[in-house]
Length: 253
Image (cartoon, rainbow, N blue to C red; front, side, top):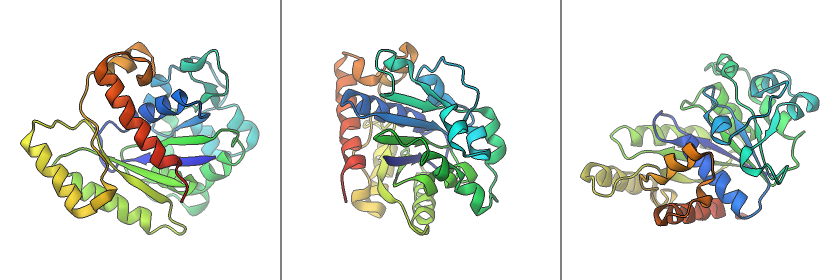
């Protein structure tokens, strides 16, 4: 199983939307996927239309990373009611906020990694993290083979991306950095074009093609459908971009 931590040092960049887009791309190609919802807001769990009630959730798993607890925290996505096991969710919980402190010890930070080893019957794990670099995000880094940094094209994006990359690269062993993905990009905005080029000047080829701000994203989420199921041209173009990002995630070193 390849595990990808999707992270950001700042809020409001659409990080969970990126996770849902990648889950949609994986579903389209038949890649069995587990989405791990580490964000206390649990938006990925909601966005993936999880309706099954489970006896445990991600907070319980982090506190007690045993196989039984982990298995009982996994629920099927409503996107795939006719294909069980193809897209599952380790369900999010507001209680995980209590585990997101800045001073978590090493044993706590490695609990997610231990848990994922016990539910590794998927090809891909997508780890949706809170918009911070505290305990939950650091747990995801230690469990991940690769990291995708989500950003926007704003004044504060450079500092947030730089801090994230420095901290990821300081880990031993360090996960592979897939890239920096600028989300909700508006080409007609001179300010956003300037900030995007600033990111490229500093981080080079790590900065991927930006994802445009399109109505297809909230439309797919509102309908409870994967992006790849929408027929609008803009949705199909955006879906192709998520396909390309997923290719980078799955490529072998």
